[in-house]
Structures are given as structure tokens and as C-alpha cells.
Length: 315
Image (cartoon, rainbow, N blue to C red; front, side, top):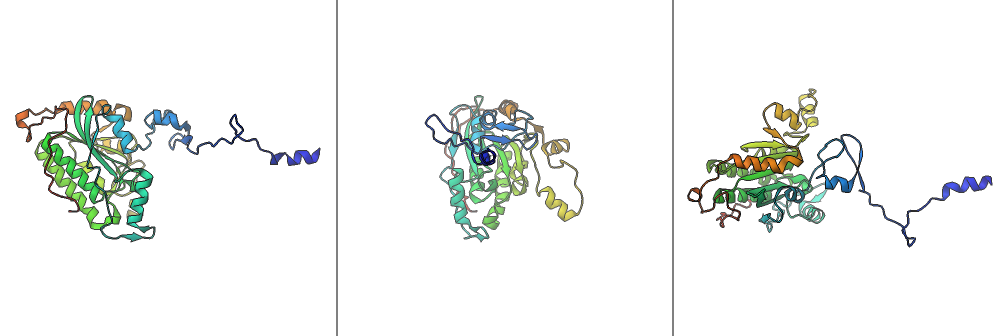
């Protein structure tokens, strides 16, 4: 009898279905919230727009999921989906060639680039969107990323469409060297033309937003919004502390800190974003047909006329 009890540890019940076959339990069935440490059923989290139902923590959201949560059903039309990055510098680091990393990332993420641009309607109001996907190389800004944003901005000028940029990025894409750093100036110049045309630019900063993206197009909008708890800055806190040898205040890069110190205009929870965007668009006067450069007013629910884009790619 003693031997029987000693052997009991070897017998473990299996999870089986009605036919006796092993049941494969998904590894991501439950998600642990990094703020409240509670376990959340993954389907419940997805149904809740990836906001923790326990404490309101905002998990990261893929670009297409974010677009779907904002625009009216079936209203989104993507721009420049055919543009793809390539390894212009034949860059190689310790992880291998950039070209191989691109292919791997594209296969894993299902996207060609870290930025998705297009237009749609939000509660019936037309708007252009340029949305980062952090799953694609940390949504780092490369030459195609910048080109897509510039083209979106030019279409907005021509069609009098307000532009909403949604940023979550680690900064410029180091694999493309100066070509990536140039996108900072390139995107800022394009948005300056948007400003001179008096077309509104709204920006939403989400977690995390750092580096060259924060230092360029993401923070030069007419109105800057942020999600609760989003980390926003240029360099990370640990890097700053290592360089300055000083202890930084807790939470100094959070959206709440930025709001208190004037960098952010409004913090908007994810569930309120759609209505807030609609209200902000209404704050701007919709130009008449004769004021529009190509006969399309911001109130028209159709895509602007084709724009001569001038071949900015790689410049």
C-alpha cells in the first residue's frame, strides 16, 4: 500500500474532449494586467477594446484594430498599401541583415510597414488617419513610413480633410540610418503645409511614444490628445538617469504629467475617443466648395481627387 501512494505522483489527469483526445489549451487564454496584477480572460479583454475591466489600464492596440474602433463601419479606405520598405543600405547588425528582419516582421505582423494611412468617416464626419502599428519593428519611422505620412498630408491639403495621427513608436528606424532621420524633417515640412492650408491636424499619443516620432510630427498638431497612462518622451527614463546621474521624479513621462505641464491638451480614455474626435472636428469650420483647392469640401463623404505626389520616396 505504501508503494501505491508513493507512485501516485506519477499519475496526472489529462484534459481530454469527448473522444478522449488531448485538449490543447491556448497559452494566451489569460492575460495578466501589469497595473492591477489581475488575470483577465483574453476574449473579455478584446471585447473591452483591450482596456483592463478591473483597473482601466490601456493595453497596446494594433493599428487596424484601432482604426476599426474609430471609423464608421466599412468606411475606411486605405492609401498607399502597395508601398513597401527595402534595405537601401544593405544594413547588417548582430541580429542579421535588415532585409531578412523585414521579411520576418512582415510575415509575423501581417503588415508591409509600421504606418497605415487612409480615410474614413467618424460619426459621419470625413477624416484622414495615419496610425502606427507597434508590432512592426516598434513602429519605428523609416523612409516608407515617412512617405506614407507625407502623402496622407498632401491628400488632406488637396481634399480639405482633417488629419488624425495616432502614434506609438520607439523612434527613427536605425536600420535605415540618415534616411530614417530625414523623415523627421520631411514629415514636419509636410504638416507645415497642412497648417498653412488651415486644415486641422489632431494627434493622439499612445503608449509608448518616444524618439524621433515624439520629436517630429506627433507633437506639432493643433490639438494633442493622449491615452491614460501613456509613456511619452524622447529618451527613456533609465537612459536619462544614466546620462544625467540624477534621480527623476516618478511618472514624469506619463500622459498625466505631460498634461499637467502643457505638452498634452487632453487625456481621452479609449471608449471616449470616437465621440471626442467627432466633437473636435466640429470645432473647425468646414470650408465651402469654392474654398477647396480641388472642389472637395471637408463635409463631402468621398475621397479627394487624385493628387500629384511628386515622388518623395527616399528623399
